[in-house]
Image (cartoon, rainbow, N blue to C red; front, side):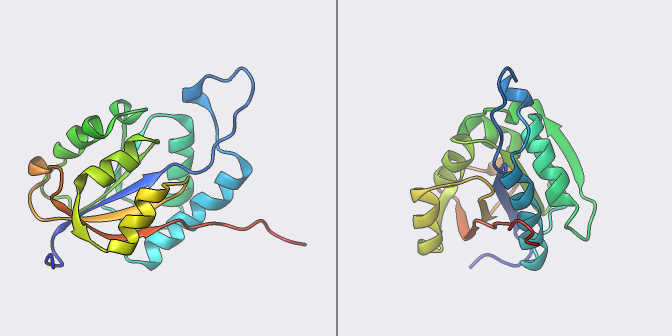
Length: 177
């Protein structure tokens, strides 16, 4: 089992987005469900003691909105980098971004898009929680959160080297009157 001081990579698929007519993909906002689910993801991170010290977020409107709602639920103010390379990125492109993380960062939250986020998680996993892995492999829905523990430096991130220790799909609920 990795030491408690090991680096953690938390991969979050953005919350549910809307598809308004005439709006370019990069500018699509969150849907109502996304605005409910993103805070639930933030609460899950806080309650599971998975608060990042660095956030790498795609520049798309829906990922930025997801971060705003997630971050509002945390008892911390991590550094946030809005990374253009994370928009519609492949697993290998996302891994390249993560390899650039400074070693002083111990918990990094990466907010991105399908299929890159799921492909990244599945490519990095070399062990861990089998049930969580089966769920992540079957479906990586909006607001899904995968937590991986890395055995070595960020710069050495490679396929099959991380342990998947948690996979959750936090959901928010509409207020009832």
